[in-house]
Amino acid sequence: MSPNVRGNRANIQNCANLGASIAHIHVRDENLKPTSDRSLFKAVLDRLDETNVNIIRQVSTGARGGSASSADWRGQMLDLNVEMASLSTGSSNFPTSVNANSPELIHDLAQKMNDFGIKPEIEVFDGAMLHNAVYLKKKGILKGPLHFNLVMNVPGSLPGTPKNLMYLVDNLPEGSTWTISGIGRSQVQMVTMAIAMGGHVRTGLEDVIFYEGKTLATNESLIERVVRIAKATGRGIATPDEARDILSIG
Ligand code: MG
Image (cartoon, rainbow, N blue to C red; front, side, top):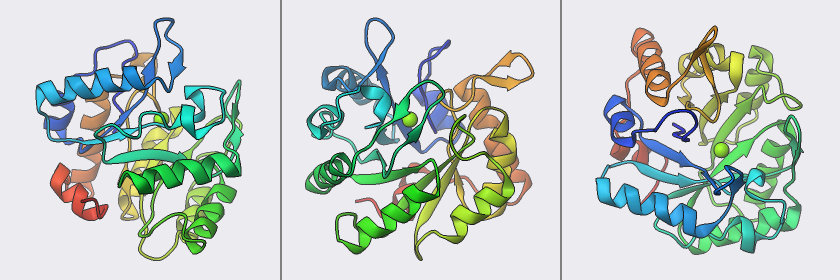
């Protein structure tokens, strides 16, 4: 689940109560520009400490956090108390910018995550990123079992279609776990397919702004919808500790 603060105050305890087991965390600076600034990540994590909520903390090392392509900038928050971090294993386009992740950056971020005992969530925006992650696992740079987030339907990247999703899932290495991110209008279809296929789900305001038509989404309403679809199809909702087991964390 992806509780970004955009247009509403994400209440992480509410999200956890509704069924969220992972908090995917981005931060923005005083001009609301996404950043990798460690002090801002620390402020969010300190707030989580205060609320004492049981949720897996996953920080973003994504390209939106700054054009500087060094792991020193993009991975500056990895020494904080977190269990997971995102790791894109290739480059693609966002609607108005480049999702730039050089081989050297990927290697250095993965190394930092290994050093700090952090489980990477491999962010796959197209097929090449998946195959690169498999290659990095063969080289010993990524440790199995791998966990993937399949990001579907970013404009400029892989469209969110059933065939594209099947292609990615068919090519996951044996023993991998995976979640889906269905961006924008693809969300409900992609989430439903992932649940039916035995995958897991990410949702939240990073991925979806509108709940339905012109109605703005909230993190809570998005989580409730995922829980409803899961229950209707006979899937359970993992607690954070069950999610740690599923993901081989700790
Ligand atoms: Mg993100």
